[in-house]
Length: 262
Image (cartoon, rainbow, N blue to C red; front, side):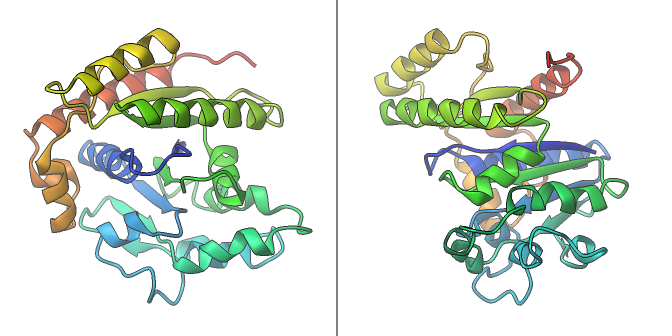
């Protein structure tokens, strides 16, 4: 299994859309994919038609065992989605209480890594949708992943959010045996606005090695796919957004073949 995390400490940058779009394209290629919703808002869970306020069991259950994960629990929590090759490990609003519970408890930072280890033979890819703040849930996502995708909205304030995310990653890397490779993905790009054009230029100047050279455009078909509860490629495989995500997936697959320095 390959594990990708999609994270940014700023909300509204396209994390959930990017997670589901990439998962959908992987599934379209015949890969078995588990998508993991670690955001208490439950956007990914809602996307696939489940109510995070009403779910009796969710990824929250994984954190209730003092850092250990009972055998078989992760597979028991999986839900079906609109795509036969995608399974969902859902979120619930109870996840929001973890930050208050975590002080004084050891081992909570590796719960998702331990959970995915139990699913290792069942899936080819895991895609984790992270919450937009640094805490035990984002730490879990980064600790479990082998590759990080950082969506960044092409507007000025998002650049500051990216700086915080890169600083967080540097902190996390100090506790990892191997640095976590990451790709910065410009999102919500509108070529008609100077804000998008200027921000994209700034991002490329600041992070020439880490930034993906493409961009994800503003595309109402992505929003329409969300309303339909379908992956973007299921809903409209020829839309501008899906074509951009296809190019991004090609970049990410090529990047994972490059050996990373310890």
